[in-house]
Length: 455
Image 1 (cartoon, helix red, strand yellow):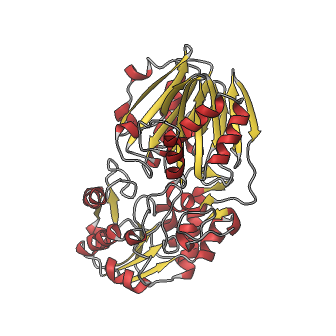
Image 2 (cartoon, rainbow, N blue to C red):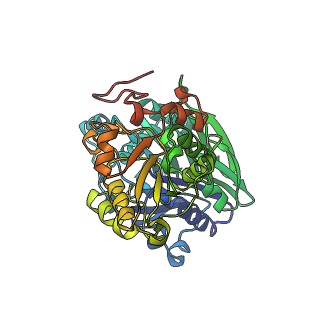
Image 3 (cartoon, helix red, strand yellow):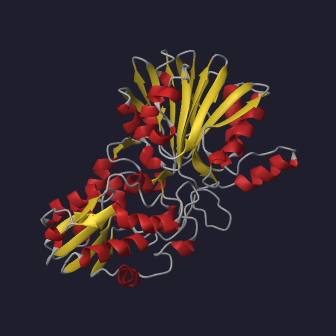
């Protein structure tokens, strides 16, 4: 999971600033590194660094990056280590000129593609799958026009890939044929904004036009916008975890309000798993919207048991387990006056590894709660994700080899209940065959080495 942006703006000095604000709105999608590449004066200027958008960029840097087209990226690594060499956009130079690529997703055939390119004598500066995409595209553009090059590129890639690309001063966006990762486009007086989520379009003052369709490319050249069909697929595989956790609740993804989905998740969760309690509290922030729905449906008072330190990032997307565990202690604190002597229901979006959930339950108990009940706004996560979410092994997934009762004891809750798969599908409102549910079912929509594929 990463956040990507593409901007076309007639005002060259405004372009990097619009890109900055769009990236800032997508900060929740990645906190390891940030970068912007701008096409101007017959070349591409790029700046990137480790850390948050506000740490990597300032007015001095942005003022030097003039041009009409740009791409931007915030990174959360799945393939490739967390280091500056892997920060994006990745910039390559070839006979066709300069190419900058920002990628959200994960290629499952990365190693096969890399081995093939190395066999041809290609050298790599990173261990990121995005460099594979950049090198393949560069080679295709030597012999083909943009549309044909994208078709050839798409035929070689297997996995999830939403892309924003600069080829010299042409801005291109592409969404893989199954639509794993979200991508949308907006229009404003200044030009166009392409982004992973609609909240980034809103932040720039642009008007949301529509989602980029799976297998569709957006090409903006000299201010002219064109939608081009690149690839077709018999099915879709929209990532259900976008609705459960990853996207911002104020975004609209593939026609569905993320806030609306999460609120409905809470209502259905309350219907499926009633509990005798005095208060309902979210595990902030990702459990907030669902906990409101839970409270409204159950009639139990909504009251915060935990207050979040807003200056601490999202623990789930931190790259190391040690960092995740440490950050829980400084990320939130219990409100003793709210929970003391009460039966508390905690609502969270999911349980991945279980370590954070245990620390949160213990924190609320230590603040004087009489009972702590845990409700989860998704089914158990039983299988790793190969398409861009950092759940790489079954061993780190608490639900892959434990019963719900065993998990309950592990996290030290008085009761534990998950949303059913049917309940999740009802809340999302998208046909089961149009979603990727692999982390919940173990059935993958495309072939993954060693895993079961379902068509």
